[in-house]
Image 1 (cartoon, rainbow, N blue to C red):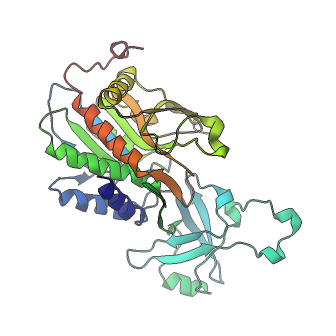
Image 2 (tube, rainbow, N blue to C red):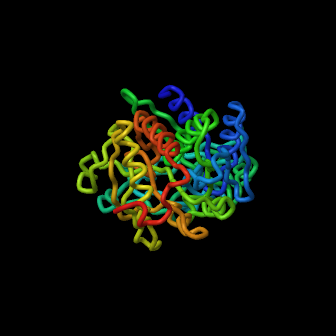
Image 3 (tube, one colour):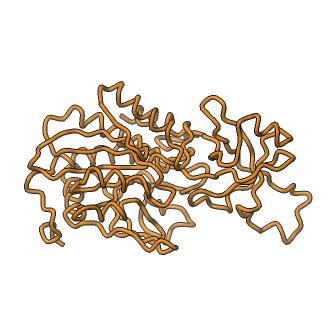
Length: 367
């Protein structure tokens, strides 16, 4: 299982898919599902949905994760061929200078570039500790003129991502581009294969969503169509096992999947999730029965598209599940494949426990 997760995640991280431009990722996932005999369908927004029918008396479930990644949009091409961009999503400006990027003009035609960094020898003392802001970003593709850049297919509006990269680390750990949330995509691909072989359980809609990094848009559209009773969102959880994160919690890489007990963004978007007690009890009891370690998270500054999906229809039994990850939104993020494998096991086992008597009210879930 770990080998297959590694292969799936590696393939997915090497496919660029800026928010709003996820088509290559969706097509890859659809082909992977079709190779297993699993039908899937896109919606108008670009989400990919695979439905596994089940007991009509049981609550329906939507398990979802996002396909997109953050990056930039070209806003201007200078006469000398240098390119200026706008930020799309929570790109950390302090990690941008000298990064390699990919300007996505078409499969097989993408153009590599680099975010220029001022020569160290010409940097003044007062500049050495200044962060390059988005407005100052200049990308060099080597073309030298605006005409040459445009001849390569680059225009205003061209999507730009970190250059896709995969870096195997020791043991089961891996670094790469867009582990957020291609790791979630790989986990749900594994889950879909399991659901295709099951003999019983609730109706489950597995959704790979779009535009999460652009104001949490895609999953809401899918939920409005599917109207699930239960919504389970899969994404990263902040690993807090490095010196810079030690005071933020107790989430460690390799310590198993995570359950979020509280999230709140608080930075412009006043939204978050307090999970439904029925869902909390489901995952805690399943983890205990199956002997799967389950880590707990409560974070401010974090937001997922479950924040809006939980409000669909009469409201959903909503919960965020995930995997520990280091270096969120950096060009190289880090996770442990063992955590992904355990998360897939937990999701599969938890879904099998949802029957007609599953409590949808908060009182039914206990406290």
